[in-house]
Length: 533
Image (cartoon, rainbow, N blue to C red; front, side, top):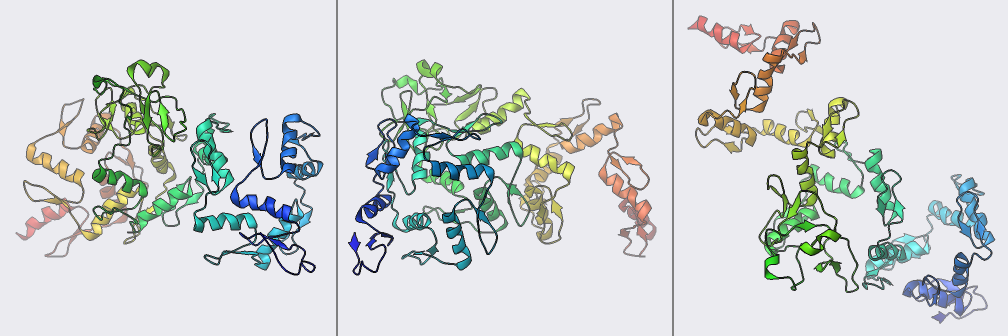
């Protein structure tokens, strides 16, 4: 704390050594200094909340005593000061008495108008000494400086973790208290902060405000858009320092690094269990979570590292009744030797996480919770429903940069691009014939093995692919789903429709190399070749 010379000519001679802000008295400077140190010496005896000065504490105590409180007739909020009450009422009346003379925007308070006007004047009262960036508001300037200094003045009293903003500390403390004050009005799910609630509500509304400028795909979060945009580039910014392999997302890198470290994040830290507890009879449950002062999540006698984002734990058989279980979900205890520890109780297939297992379980139960509002078709996954909806909208957001052809899903675009490169990476080991897709190779190999796994239930005929079976079954049902737009004639196969349409267009794409005669079908050209022999 320093007092500049010439105080008779200066209105605010007491300057803050941290940010340079001036004050008219040392007591005001001392109160301001606490905004940098995080010190809150005045504590409410009722709720324990701390304040930087006594006047703020007195105003706060009115909440508990209801002394001189004014109740807002619109929202029911109690306001302890008449001036604050008047400002609060303006939020409901939409009254904006302070108007910007440049752009006409209105504000409820004159201080807000003054701050706003700095946008037009480009006035920056606070300049960062590290990078030179300017700010017109002190709170933003202080928040920015902590990015350079790494300062975290707001500390959690339970686990000691530091934060650079009091709002982040408040949100963090709800992890320990379990408080979720922001509830969804549609499904009742609670959240620790309002931003998570807003993001969640997009699940119900279908809103996707963050749109990719290249393919038009929408996302509920800006971070998801940023990750997606790497699909359109060759950029792989996340590098493994053990093997030099690079990845497009941090999540993929972290998963890969477990190959080198042998890390198993779901590990029991207790040694008090009997030797027989780590057997295949051990069942994975999802228990109630209790915060532990030592910084470790504590679960019914087992503990996990705080690095686990969604705490999970192994519950002893005697304690399983107190836990919340997931039907048909069993996780083998020895995660050190199991790559996919979440096992299906019906078929034994393993999965990396419970959400994947839950989606798989629907293949056994037949449950399809996601229904198309247009045709009523049900799906096991929300992503499958979104892909299906493009059938009705004919949306094709994935465009080939070589020929301009558009596709409904990115895998189809990736497969199509092989047409331009003529790359055929899948080779048959029997005849050396090569294919662009692994599925085509598998289907081809059935020619050598004679395998026909798809059998018609009506006539018993076998087929090498499910698509051939579906086409064949139309012979029995008489279904003709491909209709000519000119004459209305129906066909059971799209290839037959394309051939038929040449009758209307007069197109003859197959040309004889010897005489130049043209034909509508390749079979007709082959028959014609016999004339020249």
